[in-house]
Length: 238
Image (cartoon, rainbow, N blue to C red; front, side, top):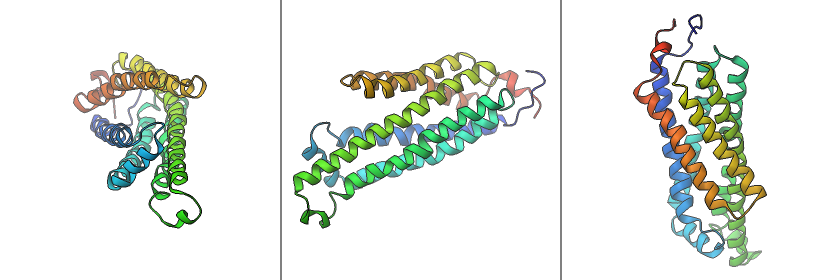
């Protein structure tokens, strides 16, 4: 490690921690609070009424999601810069999976979130569809958003695993964070492939992701904010 030249300062790592914290807050608000509160699985009419009665909140959920995805693109590039001295190819692949996961798939998937509200918030379709049909259509769009979210989570899971390996191979962060991130990645993959292939256990897979992400991603975010990086990394030549 002594001959490796660092490309990102500890100050920049702390800034990345701030961005990561904002991503966690924004994404947690959108997925955990907005959709978690308004979307009632299997209840199309109730969900539709929740969306219309809380239209501003539903729109805010889309906005905070998009903010999180924009910040994620910045984080992906910063992570590549941080880890490329240790393994440039692995760092590039890891960051590519993060860029595909949320800035790409997640952002496009927000169209389903938006259209679920749009079909309910216009009278133009009432001439062709009944109210019940529009409610079912809105519910189907939210289901499409859910599965799009899972697909993005699959890519993000691979990113977390590769990031965990990079942490273990480098001296940027304590190596146990590498194991935690690998655990987070495994949680995302379990949710994605489990929900698609073994339906009926969505509550359990969501719990697995929640715990794994809280331990791994929140843990390393706090470390970046407080410590920045290990003492050995800070001593490396800029």
